[in-house]
Amino acid sequence: SQELEQSPQSLIVQEGKNLTINCTSSKTLYGLYWYKQKYGEGLIFLMMLQKGGEEKSHEKITAKLDEKKQQSSLHITASQPSHAGIYLCGADTSGGYQKVTFGTGTKLQVIP
Amino acid sequence: NAGVTQTPKFRVLKTGQSMTLLCAQDMNHEYMYWYRQDPGMGLRLIHYSVGEGTTAKGEVPDGYNVSRLKKQNFLLGLESAAPSQTSVYFCASSLQGDQPQHFGDGTRLSIL
Image 1 (tube, rainbow over the protein chains, first blue to last red):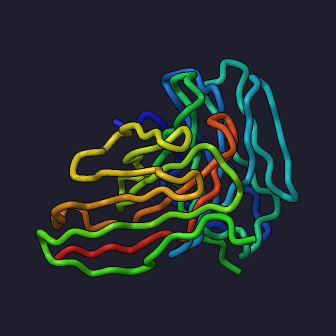
Image 2: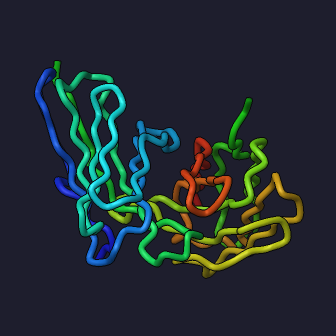
């Protein structure tokens, strides 16, 4: 089983709608990272969360790390076609601050 | 500013052949990583390095070797390629282990 579970696996939304992607772990998340990947390209860093209860926003994307540091959510407000891609969460679940485990990703399609 | 550069971008090998993938970063990062990305499996760590002259095994190290002779370069070698190693390989680097990773554009490797 995956150490980091992402849900949903795929999502199709109409332009302008809001959406949420979740990333859940059975272990403490010492550092949680959100990335976006377009088909055939590398991963682009979006945000990093480290403290329980922390919330960060960039443009129309908001990410939160829950108080127990075992779940994170990524929320997109008023989605646009440019938001389409694969969203991956990655986390340090050992506390060693050397390597990151990634979830399997959430594929987002935005229909105009 | 190039960031993380991977060469080659595409390669087709026959079973049993050997090859080396090169990753170069110009950000003076200490940490470097090699991942493979397969459908349904997400991003899995092959090997990583916490500094020049160091290497460590990740989640799926079998069949691969790495070297970090210079701080800016991280080489991934396949000594005897197998069809199971057909994948997209990503290199990443970070300033320290608790900092976001910067990714290259990937190498698509097919082994026949």
